[in-house]
Image 1 (spheres, one colour):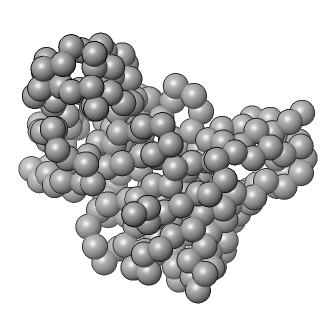
Image 2 (image 1 turned 90 degrees about the vertical axis):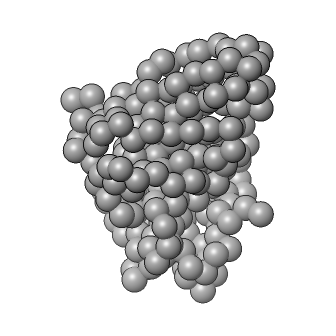
Length: 113
Length: 112
């Protein structure tokens, strides 16, 4: 049973437009969420996080939105750049539990020049 | 600034052979993790170490052992490799509880 789901395996967006990557979770105990970016042959790199006490967190071109009632989070990239082309993973954890992060299966973003 | 270093980067083993994957971090992080990534599966936690001297099982620990040698180093051992353990293995570290993790570049392991 996948507790964190990224239902879109891939996404293509024109350069300069908005990229929206989605993530759904099933465990209501999750209260800390992260997004990672991964280039081929490299390890994932941390992008942005959000705690459940917030519904939005912004860092430059990257904004994460959290809808707790829908158990849904999204990553917005504005404007999208060719260098953003990568695989994006969301991850979730329950701070009341152990140190375990559950990762989604990833979405491959391609930004077209 | 090395961050998290994994060795080796690639390895091919025969079924039944043993192997230790090495991981070291230079960020003075307390927590360290081992993940495996398989196609279409995301990253799955094998073992983690919340602090020096402690280790705990993750989602998929069967067939693996770990050692937290000191604060810097966390190794993953396959005692008798099986083809199902063919995967890309990532080591990660973090300052502590629920902090963002820093990943190494992975070890690509093939078991024939």
